[in-house]
Amino acid sequence: MAFEKNHYNYGTWTKGRFSEAVTVTGPAKMIFVAGIGSEHEETGDPLFKDDFQAQCRYAYQKLKAVLEKNGATMHDVVKQVTYVTDVRYWKDASAIRAEQYGDAPLPVHTFLNVNQLAFPGMLVEIDVIAMVPAT
Image 1: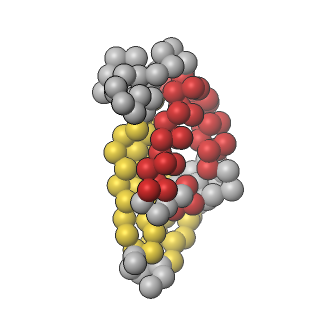
Image 2: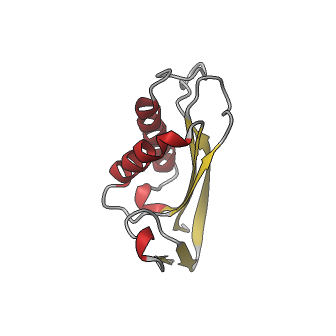
C-alpha cells in the first residue's frame, strides 16, 4: 500500500529553509527517532568537544544510520527538531542541515536554543519523525 506525502510553503521566506506543513495520506509506518547528538556509540561520551560543525555532522551520520535500519532515508523525514546550546550556531546548523538533506524535500523544522543537552559538552541534538509505506 502506498501513501502520499506533500510539502507546503505558504510564506516566501520559508522556501528552501523548511516546509511549513507536511501532510501524509494513506497507510504508513511512522519512525520516531530520539534526540541524536555526538555521543560515542560505545561509551556515550560526547565527541568533538567545542566543535559544533563536527558534532552536527556526526549527529546526522548517526541519524541516517538509524533511519536506514528502519527502512527510511532523509527523503522520508517529515519533522525535525534541532536543539543547540548557543543560538549563534544557527547559520552553521542551517548550512549543514541543507547539505545533509541534499535533494530531499526539507521537512517541517523547529530550531530551539536550550541551556544544556543530555551530557556536558554536547552542543547539538537532533530528533526526527519519518514515514515510509506500511509493509
